[in-house]
Amino acid sequence: MSLSEILGSVIQAGMTSSSHDRLKNSLGESGGGGLLESLSSMLGGAGGGLGAGLGGLGGLLGSVLGDVEKTVGGKQNLALGGLGALAGALLGGGRGSMGGALGGGLMALLGAMAYKVLKGSGTETSGVPIGLAEPKTEAERQGLEQHAELLLKAMINAAKADGQIDESEVQRIVGKLQEDGIDRNEQQFMIMEMQKPMETQQLIAAVGGRPDVAAQVYAASLFAIEVDTPGEKEYLNQLEAGLGLTPEVTQQIREFVGVHPA
Image (cartoon, rainbow, N blue to C red; front, side):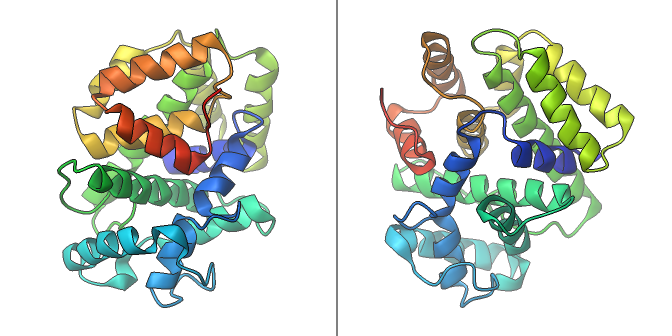
């Protein structure tokens, strides 16, 4: 089972009506500059012309990428291909089944976002943000798959904050999986996950106290809900506290994603 492919299909389908707008905001399409523009520009166009301007994040992300390049051994190892696929799919250029690339793009986006926000808040960070470096070994590929599963479960759990995911939403997402060639066993996995009761404490435990993963789980959750009901707001408060994230960090993530206070 490829969890990154399932994650990509779910992202392309959108778990809420605002999912794509929030991803576009994170990528910088809304006009204020974003991670994609900054990454592409600072890598000298290595991202295939995905954005020419540094935007407001250039300085901070420049230091992030400097750390990454030292650790992984060069710019060519950064996962820009997935970011390009994600941008193309969301901004009008994507078509057909690109699940694995889209899932990888989302993980790269969330990894860079988490690193930037945590470093800006003074939180101790080390190593390469998971998802931002291309895996070199089977162990690293398996680690990415486990991370994709965690993000997928975070989105599904958040979508249940106001109760169960209704049957029409289940069928819409399963329809997208079918369209993308996801097999029946994997479709059944998704159906079972969407029909389970909430597993917030298990999700928090799976993060293992890692601040960078906690920030990614919180951000992924914002892509799955509208944040316009008491239940959703309470869930995010519970997630923030359980993950050990400060209000400063979660507010910066919300600004990145484009979730504004009611």
